[in-house]
Length: 124
Image (tube, rainbow, N blue to C red; front, side, top):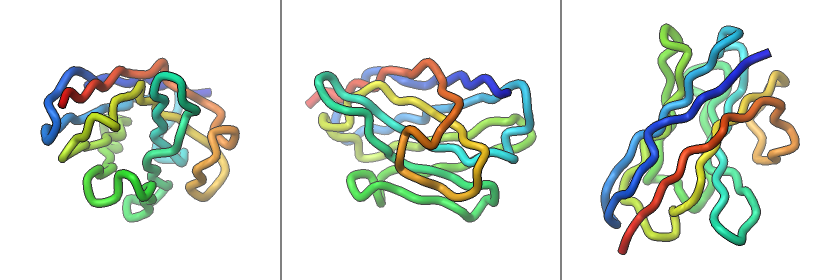
């Protein structure tokens, strides 16, 4: 069992940056594959980025590739999503999620544990 708590959302102008954090409790986070998802109003939840069990294992959706970066601090049981060059279309509630099976996937049903979400709003 693991509990996830996101933070770091907020209001930012287009072109700005934000860092989201996802802190895990209950079990060592390094044993999980973790994904970041987002859901904009009226749209389905979509995969944004993921990080595997090893530090070099990452995967990004085409919409954020080159702008967003995932990283980790295992000592703090925390994963990060650094978002740069933000666009109004990045506005959404962002969620971190964890799965126990190996391999980063972009299917939300593969992920067992979810955080409560944090709102990111990008103004034009």
